[in-house]
Length: 231
Image (cartoon, rainbow, N blue to C red; front, side, top):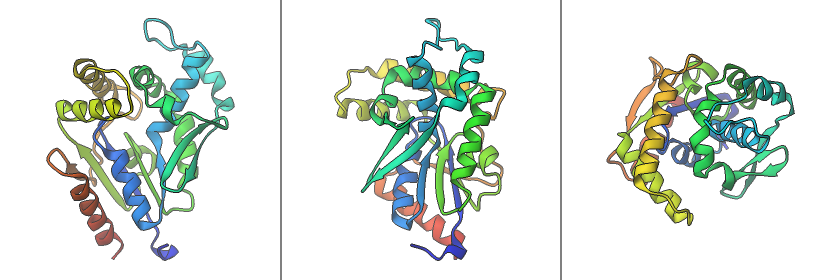
């Protein structure tokens, strides 16, 4: 574990399926920080809304009903060795929140101001003691605008869609490249154009295009940026 006096907050933002979560998780593990997947938190709220019939067949969300339910939604993370699971009201929902039905609805749920305000407060509480690596869409702009290290991860939608297809197929799910690409492009549009905390690169964030990087190259580059920041 690093010296507490040098513990910082690391904000990693970027587009869906850009690999930012894997990178953030690996960095946190290597430097002894806590990793917080903010995207998993929005997915958990989306799953809750789906289970409680708060999302209509046309994809619209019953905003008032979901807003009233937010105080009843508790999200935390359980760490077991190298594995981290998302807990929704005490239930491990890690596998379910990664499936395509949740992916197809999460951007609409995440665009709701009340949802964002509720989860941002949770995220800021997670970072209260610092020593945190958090990834998402608005970590460096809204959640932790004063984070000491900000990274913005980017790659073409086609590259990100293929990565997502490979990931889902490895998990045994049946998907096509076309439906995943459509999902990625739709999420990009919603994330970039929503009124509340839209996806954008913080002015002081480091642009990180990992299109042609291997996982090892990504991890080494991030670790180098961290060491430069705390040195």
